Amino acid sequence: MTTFKELGLNSEIMKSLSDLGFLEPSPVQEKAITFILKSKKDLIALAQTGTGKTAAFGLPILNQIKTGRKDLQAIIICPTRELCIQISEDIKKLAKYSKGIITTAVYGGERIDIQIRALRKGTNIVVGTPGRVHDLIRRKILKLQNIRWLVLDEADEMLDMGFKDDLDAILEETPKTRQTLLFSATMSKSVNAIARKYMGDAEEISIGEKNIGAEKVTHEYFMVHPRDRFEALKRILDYLPGVYGILFCRTRRETGEIADKLKEANYDTEALHGDISQNMRTNIMDRFKRKQVRLLVATDVAARGIDVSDLSHVINYNLPDQNGAYIHRSGRTGRAQKSGISISIITPREVRRIGELEGTIGKKFELKKVPSGKDVCLKQIDNFLEEIEKTDIKNTNNEQYFKNFIERLKKINKEDLIKIFLTHKFNHFMDVYKNTQDLNATAKIFNTRSGEENHVSLKINFGKKEGFDIKGLFALINSDRKLKGIEIGRINLKLENSIFSVEKSRADDVVKQLQGAIFRGKKIDIKKSNETVGFHERRRENQSRGFKRKRKGFKRRSNI
Ligand code: ADP
Ligand code: MG
Image (cartoon, rainbow, N blue to C red; front, side, top):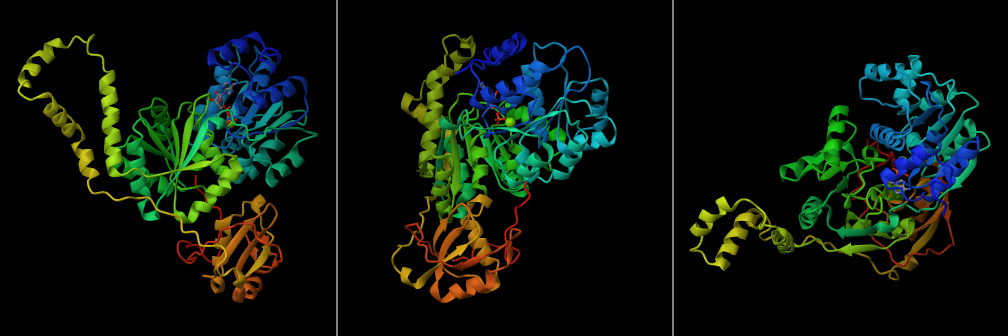
């Protein structure tokens, strides 16, 4: 392993790294820093969240910035406001001893005149979101004609969020001589298109799934009926008194609702999503970092890239639609050499997703039982007593208060005193949890063999590569009114295509209805197949239940 020093970073940077406690470079840092310091060629770096990408581009740029001048030399584009603030703060920390390097963040939702003033004073590095940067270019405030580096951070996410036009416009403004550094978790089609259109002969670095902290994350799941989800969440939270983490929801609306319900029940929580004003968001993030807010309820997009280093838990109120998003979510914990737990609350019909996720992250999930009301109360008391045992009364100067009261309570014997004391403290809790039910659900998996002879395999040209999954398959079948309710047997999702079995009597209908239709923007090719299906269990589902989106198929929802 090479050290930061051996990579050729200057002494000012070495000093800030030592302040930050970065002892050695992560794999993507080692490769990217080496490359950017010696080459002017473009770079595509693929690495998951939490692998230290900010420093991977930040350090070599800082090392080469010409100091003592006020011209713009580097621009970093990233998808969200939070990420933009975070990256600019990270870069300022890395540049702490590099005198005279000025970094400015520009992002939407904040007054543009203030940002314009900052830019007019002169800056060397701009970190910005696509929309705001484009706006500032149109106003002729930001001039990119002389920049040396253009960084596209989380390029895949920016494209997914529909920033392609802004990016195109920004890229048009930059000089041909620039070095483009593209960082992304995945090499999607659209990222590839950007690379082809705007990048020269680029070097490619790809770091497997090795998150700095990924090894330190354990994965747990709880299985409940959909109606019990919130109740289960409360129990889980009550069972984890010290929890400090992010609760992921799928939509802004759900995020707001869950945060409100939790607040009502007295949890230290706040919602973070795109409908919340920039001022509020900054305020919430500050309080979260100071641990005044213990649980941030957020959408994937709002939480993207947020790096709070010592989160104990990530909780998935429900699983994300895409397995890749799960990696991003769980990557929020287990960072900076700490361990973390990623919890998912799932319903019996989602149990198969756990198997898929195990494949994606290469790790096992542990099924946990939702604690009973009694478990929760015992745990709370236990925790409290642990704190009591740790309380040091020898060195307090409060004798003056204690004396009278000790005298006054003398009549009560010790055992009763403890009971009174605990009842007083936990009365509310014990009341809430009196007569509560077991919330654990079981997955109904039907035997494979029975009825298999009545099924026929079909092959469809949709696979995992484009994010097709079991839910997608059900959504597809349910999108056609004539097919709704058809029984699907075994399912085998492969990279390029998928095989699934349906009732023999309906197989022709399925082919007839779906062949040539458009699903998720692609023409369906479906036919009968002799391939056997690999899964050993088969699930009967009442498919018409729970999938409300019919006909139109399955659109990615906007969940900022
Ligand atoms: P990414 O952009 O890949 O998601 P970040 O750049 O946000 O990752 O870094 C993730 C975390 O790891 C941050 O808390 C960062 O301070 C920390 N980190 C980065 N590089 C190192 C290193 N070399 N040693 C220790 N911690 C690091
Ligand atoms: Mg990052």
